[in-house]
Length: 474
Figure (cartoon, rainbow, N blue to C red):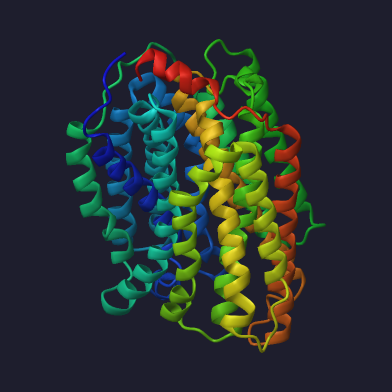
């Protein structure tokens, strides 16, 4: 067994930075969107694709990123991802027209799809020797996500106000350069493995996921009963069915289907999918309630989310590891999802003439505590359940689960909110009703996650891969 790397905690800082940037890039564009619309000529209908182009590329290619990480080595893919993210950020910042901007955002998503699974694989390589260290490392890694989301809101407003909108993309460039320089000295090397890349599988799963997100995003405008909506959804289902059939027949598939027979892996991934499907819509509509109903500008709105963000970080770093050690990952996950459900149900009681201290703060803190308790144990269970040589695949699957859940959950709750009045800008009662309906829907998703986790997760405190990783010296 090889000795643990003496630089592993410094390396973890770089891995957490990767998670921070990947999540920040989804939120930093929010305040800049009106300026981008004016400068590039986006229609109102297409403006959402500045967000969706990144998310679809990211979520659709995570499985490929995980497979490439296993074949070519996580360190190499981590560096490649940063290089592609740098190129996409430059292209998005320099974009003279709409199609170039969306291309740049998609390229950013490709880079993120290589960074995210390889980062988790590197984390397992650095800390898999010690389950306690692994839990602490996962807590720090997980806490980087809400930090990135909140920082994106602040930085987006600051940059747009005092510089110009292209700088919401240029900010990635110096960070990527630092990451590229630091990766070699800090990250462990893994030998490349022989194997092939399932190009057809990659195309079908990416197009299938993209079609599903597109259909749900478009449904409020096209109509849920329209031929367009159902034809695109049917195409998504067909493409995903072809992907599953291909994976079942190929000798070296993009995603080995039998991996889901690994104890806890399928259950933990389904939990992560539902957690993303509940949390991201809550965060999105809470921000809209603060700005469109309570009248907060971008900076006060971001500040209003700080207590929730701080509690999530404390919960992930301090509370979740202790709860896992005492009660086990299953009980901690289920408790967290139930608290998240309660917090969002409480948020659904918002009123048009409400206030931050009464309508937002207490409920958001309950939801934040739930998120912090549910995220770490379900993530750790998902990635530690697989064999060490499939760490990249497991990381790609769990990242895909969370991102696809986030995208589909947000699209579905956007449709729910719109159907209940959220499209009537300036009509505060209607907006509040729409946002309240979205909170109820998100609470239902979280409750489903709690019930499924309670029924399917096994109670064993330590996943088998941790022991295997220790034995193999990863």
